Image (cartoon, rainbow over all chains, first blue to last red):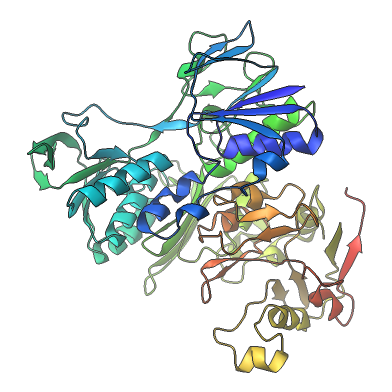
Length: 425
Length: 149
């Protein structure tokens, strides 16, 4: 059997590791647009800030591909997928036949077409090359002020890095608060207070309408309300969209992302897809949607790889989750947080002195969401209860207590948890 | 692989496992020095949970399909191919806490004092029996090879 993988990040590596756990000899080929060995995309803002050097960017050891018997074709983009012929056409015109294919092409940063967005000095931050371009720009030109558009995860991690580099940072957010997709109001407020302490300017309910040019360089931005902010660099961090152009005009079905069954197989037999490019079932919202996070990508790649190698694994679905540390404030948010609007039950605790916050959202006695700010330890116990859709009615009173742990769970569930498949008590 | 099994019915909450784990992961490996002279003090890589008469020690289960390995953004959390243990490479870890978000046992700790990295049971690699098990006076934790369910 031979396996071809388009993409070289979490999903691709998950697939390689799964395939090799079942098939020692089948040929594996990875084709990737980027020229790098698999690296950690989320680390690019750490790289910018100088917290990690380039040698620490890599996701697996240098000899990974060799050890796993993977042939890599890096720096080449697949520009055509011929489904009936089971053939890929690369950007240098070369052709690659495949037997089992995994599409793990990820997502791209959304770049809105505002006036001036094509100027030199306007960036998105999605990959290593983007980080390098920003670094090069900062080394070449004198930049003291930067405008970051988007107060979500990418935007704020970028803002944090620029702040640490000593730049004056303004964040522009369309919604009325930061991290609106991941946080509830309270959590947003806590991190916004921290932003203010750090001297990061935040403009909410606004967006950039025009980027101004000044002597062939960036001079500033004009906001929707005509306010002008002076800056020498602009970074867009407003979101990602799945890279599905390759499968357009093929029988592979798509919505926002590629549609797959629970085995991560597309509508075409022998063609699988995984990672930020796909839609998966959100088991809390009970609908298909892209949930572009690293843990999902790896797991989906793993499931796809198992099935490509002849195994039978089902992807259990997922839900939104993220762990993000912003300006030294650790936060973990999981599942549904807009409880009040949805008439869901809420348990919460706010420690005013430490600006620490915990909230758990319940639906019919089952946890469907949790957010922890500062006190994040043991957060995974909540995530596990959400995943297992465990009725917590019998111990709901201790859910937010300081010593909440496995000991708080009913004995049978605790035993099941530690004795279940793959785990041990 | 041999794993640590928990028998909560025997645990008396003496916390010797915790003490010996801390010592094992200290600089000096000496019990008095580890507590009195090393600052910041080393961390125990296990959790002792206690409520009334019930108690048990809990350390990384070294899951077959480990959520922490799947979630780790840097590749620091990996399965050791030789021993099958799930280990965290503290040089690679940047402290993003994805592992803490997904570990259903809550046994990964933040080592904030020393390195701001994730800290977890390493099965005392190199030792025949992990020190927590060896020092448990009444076999409330045991180190055994059992068939995978």
